[in-house]
Image 1 (cartoon, helix red, strand yellow):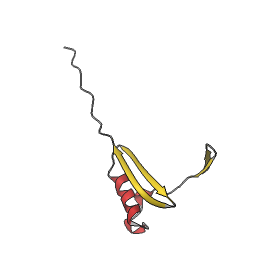
Image 2 (cartoon, rainbow, N blue to C red):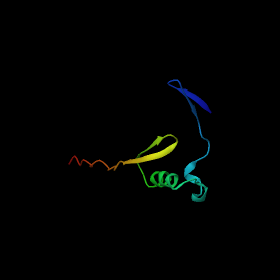
Image 3 (cartoon, rainbow, N blue to C red):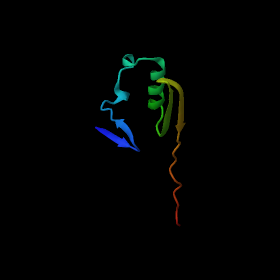
Image 4 (spheres, rainbow, N blue to C red):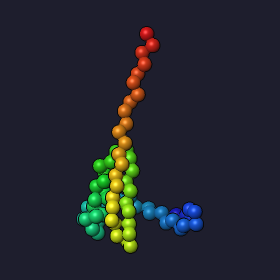
Length: 73
């Protein structure tokens, strides 16, 4: 499915990259992106690309805690 967001053409990718075998990757940097995705339970992965090359990977992870239970006794 193709879409347009803010005048930019966006093409959807149907395959799930997290299911690809590691040997199917094209570079060690792509392996790093996939590793960051697999190791992040809750958070974001930002990949910065300059001239079609990965130059930075930023991972922000959230730590989620259950709220304390209130005992109204």
